[in-house]
Length: 125
Image (tube, rainbow, N blue to C red; front, side, top):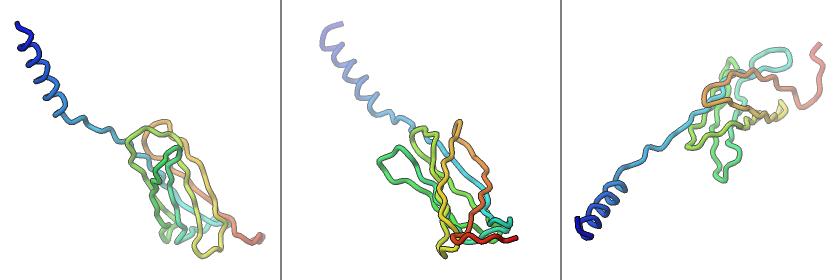
């Protein structure tokens, strides 16, 4: 083979290799749970925000608890991550804002039950 043939074959291989689209991996992390008050009653309307940590981009998912206090937040990201922050806040300002850290072994779903305390310390008993 001549030098030109080798160069032509190499150029052809490089051009076709760059046309092949690499599949981008995605990872989905989900936190599902319920929010209750100190006397174990479900809280409706609590804002739950799942934030990505260690990222320059602001990526988050927001949900509000339903009438049974249940919520589901999830993030799909392109790089593996183990730690996420979940912020619980009450728009009506009756309950204290709470921030929790969740650590995943691998992508998947975690279930959590959260109890929010009132902003004013009141003994219900």
